[in-house]
Each structure stands twice: as structure tokens, then as C-alpha cells.
Image (cartoon, rainbow, N blue to C red; front, side):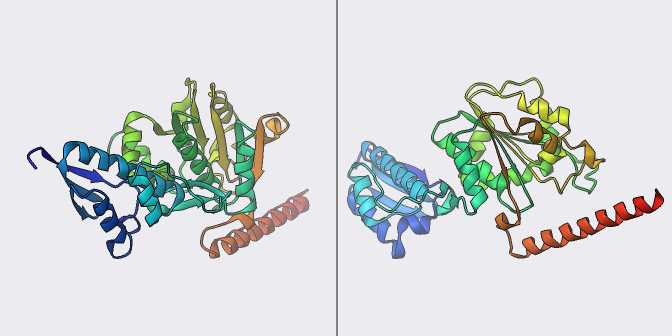
Amino acid sequence: MTDAVGREILIEGADPRELYGPQNAYLEQIKTLHPTLKIVARGQTLKVLGPERETQRFARHMDALVAYYLKYGHISSQVIDQCFSGGALTDDSPVDKDVIVYGNSGNIVRARTVNQQRLVKLYDHNDLLFAVGPAGSGKTYTAIALAVRALKERQVRRIILTRPAVEAGEKLGFLPGDMKEKLDPYLQPLYDALNDMIPPLKLQKFLEEGTVQIAPLAYMRGRTLDNAFVILDEAQNTTLSQIKMFLTRMGRNAKFIVTGDVTQIDLPRRSDSGLVRTMEILRRIEGIGIVEFDRRDIVRHPLVKYIVDAFDRQTAGGADESEENQTKKE
């Protein structure tokens, strides 16, 4: 094997245990389909030794197999035969209409509640969407899943995620590092969602290239956002002028989603929030959709629903007492 070359193939986003099969059955099948190659698996890395042309062909087949797995969330012996014979890959299993995108390690991101499904449906017919509701209802996660799907299907060229840099009650104080490091604590929930849906190395590359951008709202001023899927998160912490500034950044072939929870306003005065007022102003404009999530959409730990209910009752009771005291004063 005088022309033998060595090559390492990194499996991004797929669970090696699923890809190699029980007792490495799929891996052994793959080896038999490339008998001239020596293939050694080490976790997410495949070390391949053999003729250069054959190693290149093997790499293409593995890319196709991983892509299939990431799309459909499973593989089989038949899929491997199709893939490594160069045939067209198809999936004959029933189509799950609620699936938005296939994430990392076979993670399936789907619209799990009525309002999440409504958001996905309205996305097809509206370029601007508002998704408002309580913590844990999946509004931001669903919006980011739609953005990742649009990027994968090349409907847009980039994803831009933004939120106002407003502290949620605590004081972060002076933080070391550059501007990005100072602002990352505000933006971490967006990174968390992306890490579920895009392989780490690919996400890092997207961030370096600007294909995925995460920035505070102030950085949006003066920009025109073309061919982009843009999400404004925590919009309850924007003023009316800030949210107007954001919405007027919309360029050609752009999709905008605004998410927020009006019960968690962190501005000095609750009345400064421009989210509710903006929805009132824009509610009847064609091309704009509004989805109002509620407690039934909460998909975190079951206790979260009871926590939200308890705080809502307490808040309502406090408001009633305040009105009663005001009446007595008058």
C-alpha cells in the first residue's frame, strides 16, 4: 500500500454509540463496505488509512451518513447500505410534522404545545412574529429552532440573536475581559439553545465567520439586516423607542421574531416597557403574527407551572390591596 494516506474524520453532532450501532454492528458493516481501508474508531474520531481516493470516498459517505442521522434522528443497516453504495438516501418513516429541527446527538426539537405549533405555523406566513408568555413556555427555544432550520435550509444567510443588557435584579458589577466577555452573562441562554442544535465545532466556526451573531440590542442601531433571521429576546426590557429601532432594522429577505415575558420586567419602571404597547400598535398589520403563550405551554420541570401560578396569585393580590389602599386615601 505504497500510496496509503492517513486521515482523521471527526463526527460532529452525532452520538457515536448510535452511529456505530449495538456492539459496533454498524461500524463493522461500514468496514466491510470499504475493505481496502483500515478504520479505527475512537469516540467521535475515525482514523482511516488507505489509498487516497478511497479515503476521500469514505469521508464523503460518512458525511452523508451523519447528515442523514442529524436530519432524521436514526440510522439502520439499510441506510448504511444506501449511503455507502452511493444511492439516494430517503426516509420511509412517517413524517412528524411537529419536528422543527434535528439537533445534536439525535436530539429532536419539536413544537410540543399548541402555541409552539401555532408559532411554527404562523412563521410560514409572516415575516415578523411576536411570542410572549411566561418563563419556561419554550418561546425563545422554538424561535431559535426555527432560525437554525432556516439556516440549514439556506433560507437565510445568517442568524442574529440579540437582547437588551438589563440586569435581572442582581448587580454584575465590574467584570474583567473584553466587551464580549462582559456581555456574555446576559446572552448565555441564547448560547445554550444553539449548543443543543448546532455541533460545537460548527457553531464556533459560525460565530467566528459571523454566520451566527449574538449581540446586545444597542449594537443593532444603524444596521440594515438583510437575508437574516433575527430574534430579539427579553423584549419586555426594551423601551418603546428601542423596540422601534430594532424593528426598523428589517431588510430584504429577513425574518424577525420578538420574544418576551411581561411579568418579568427588569426596567426601573415597569411602565417604561414598550413590548405590550408595540403589539397593540402593530396587531392588525398584515404580515405580523402574534402568539400569546400561557401556563399550559410551560415545558420545564412540572414545578415551574405551580411556581408561576403562585407568583401570579400573589401579584394579583398585591395589586388588589394597592387599589384598595388608594381608594381609602382618596
